[in-house]
Length: 336
Image (cartoon, rainbow, N blue to C red; front, side, top):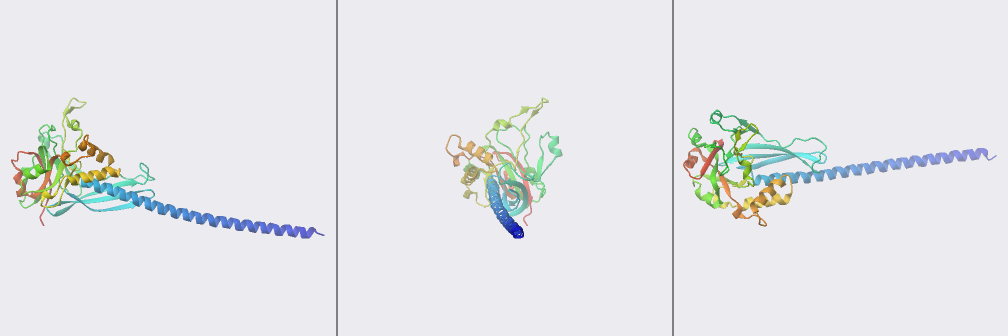
């Protein structure tokens, strides 16, 4: 007599168990979904903070490096794009010639939250430079060419290290000044016959010219520039330093007495402490300048050249100056 009731009880128990399992499954699914959402949200927030930090650090690296490089260049802006644990940034600069700005560079680079690792392949640094053969230079046996800015077609300056053997192939662009409108605003790189202190440079440079940037001796391996014999038995000589390579410091003020070597040293110290993208270069220069001392000081800064600006007429005052080893033309602009 208990058979039907027992069977009914068993069916009810089965339903209860299935219902409990369903509730448990739903509860687990909801909890899993909530946990996934929370984890995903946490990953997104974490990635945002990490990429933002990495972007700020990358830009700080770029800005500090710009303090000791880029003759006459100023930052005009930057923009970044981020992905998962990586991103890209673009860094814009302009040159300033006697108060007239010229768009100069659009540098694109990448950064990663985890060094040496990225989930995608990213483009490296992008600079715009065009090297164009010069018929007159080729005829005279020059082993190098002039470089031009790929964005605006302006010339890039060249710098000659004192005592380095360039096989006599050193440009003196002063005659070019006579061929242009005398009111044109011009920048020129003056390479010296030897290294000087900053105070000496300020004294020997003609007072009518604006001293905008000072080229610092950061060359810890000058033997690298010695002539050598290549595999074909041909003797090759050093080529000048293009303005993208040189290090120094400058101002945008008509009174050069206000600038000191401290500007360069402060930027160098920041770069060393940052341990970032340009860590090797900052430390190389820092160690070269300080020698056996704890840190470099202003007496360790030796100037190899100066960038000056003025009108084409004013810059002709450089003619006949005994300290001038080479002079190369840079950007040329109109006053208005």
